[in-house]
Image (cartoon, rainbow, N blue to C red):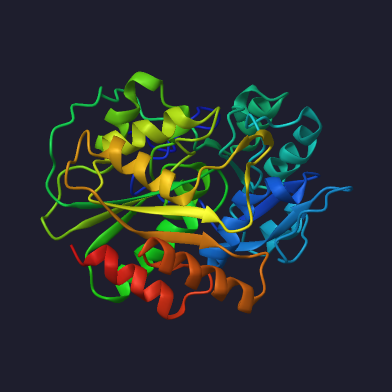
Length: 351
């Protein structure tokens, strides 16, 4: 596990590391559908954010105050976070000037993209001259082992999905918060860029070489006290034509005692892959449980977490009630909360 010392060396984000905040959230000129990192930080770490920096032509917004890097630094910001997660994790060349502007203003740069900050234009040179840091959180730690499948002490919950980008991180964070409110000893285990920025540490699973995915998941949630819970943020979907591999590695390596299946109520096709239909909820539960039993035969389904953001309250309630009755399983929207979400939490803890 490396420190953050140095100006242009790229570093991973080890557990317990405190990233330099408050943050200025950089939105570039990206489409709102790609701004999930910024939205996640706004929703789960708003006290660490001072504002947003949006380029001309950009339509994404967090609703925070629009600021330049100079204004943000004067308001107390210590770093600017690239708040975008686009396909392939590529930082466009046209953003380089704005990123350099942040360094010149006295801010460190934090990115969770696959593009390395030090490889972009003259950012490495600007960072050395200004004494600022380039921090890439999407670099896995060195020396990850191959998975062993060895049973570990402690308890684990993993969020899985019918697709990408439908609430696995939000669900894991909401369950962590609910467990803590009940006095349960637990930790949120981040596996993606936004989660790592929120938690301050974790392993970026989509950057781990495939042979070491299960081992990385084992490393992320090690042996613990028998009553301790690790709430592991899921990635991808077993049904995704591109990202099923990371889902399977997490499923085997996490050895979850409980799964929570995440779904978007009105989504019927794989996002941005319209040729592929989503599975039924029953099919998704069955396959995840079958594959999870390879490393934990006692795994069970805790419930279904549904994203109903595009539905009216009445329509959402009806969808959840009908689905819960049909599947004999707790169904809840963690953002809406309420008795349905508490019932899902109850079921996760009941085993």
